[in-house]
Length: 165
Image 1 (cartoon, one colour):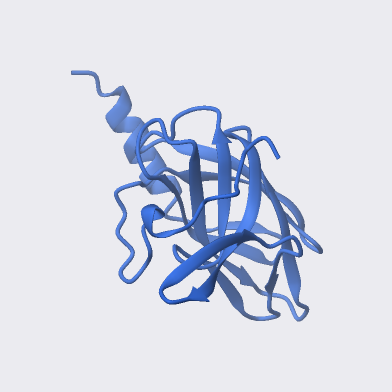
Image 2 (cartoon, helix red, strand yellow):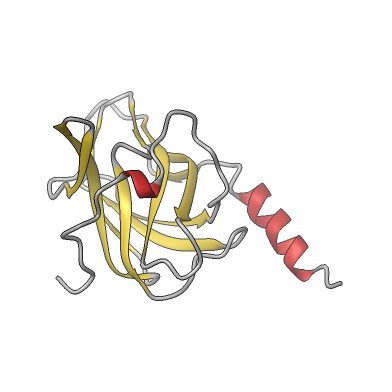
């Protein structure tokens, strides 16, 4: 049995335990997941903290792992139906505060995956803030993570989201 994959997984676990900074913006507790091997979409979740005296805004995310990457949220359509939709204006990160991207809430959506997300490996993403600029982040794949009270990918309506739009 090779130690290579075990060492890579250990390294990823250790390195991602620490926050990533862009100026006074900090990304913490980030992970990506997909419903299953061969899935065409996935999502990223994280906590974004703003240690400045001015609001900033997460305006975009890019990654080679997908044909399209968008900022998304869920809207309650009533009668227990949630609809996922793009947030073109991005997410405000309040001055001295934070914004959490969570399952069932605001998140990063990867559509038209170009490769499988493999448990224990990482995905490189570039997050862009209105004021803080770009930050390249290695985010671990953790499709086994259970967020209490969060929705699972099968709980959301992905209809109308095509990677070829």
